[in-house]
Image (tube, rainbow, N blue to C red; front, side, top):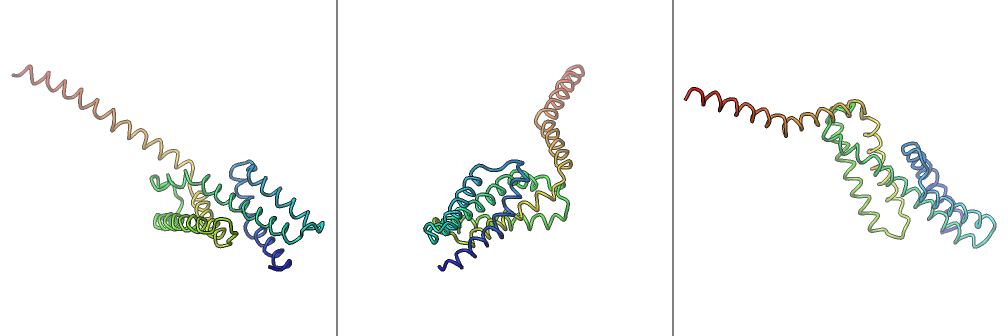
Length: 192
């Protein structure tokens, strides 16, 4: 690959994938992920070596590799961070601010993309295939859009209601039936 096309590839990964993913994960977690910062620092170091003329081809390629891994890590972290609440939304669909059919479609698409991303990543270990970044970006993007469409207050209320209903089914109703049975047995014992 020529120096110019490698340079274009580096900046494409940086602009199109890393910047958005990094800002999303920092906003979502309110912290800067150490592994991503380490990859970013390594990319910067190789970029400076490239600029100083030290093995320019090798250092530009290494810088691109580090920024690629940083972007990939960001997407996977965003996926992981949103996974919990997005997985729960299937149980508490009333907390989703949108059509249920739209939610189900998004959940299915999200899972398909994540599976395809993981499969592509597994088949391209060691290479920097943009297809892998695109798949993870799309999967994390859907997960992020679902997360943003969840009414957190409604989610808490639905969880609380489910907890109380579960308690009643598990403990309250059996206790009431037991007391009713004892009273009924006592009353029937008086007449017979």
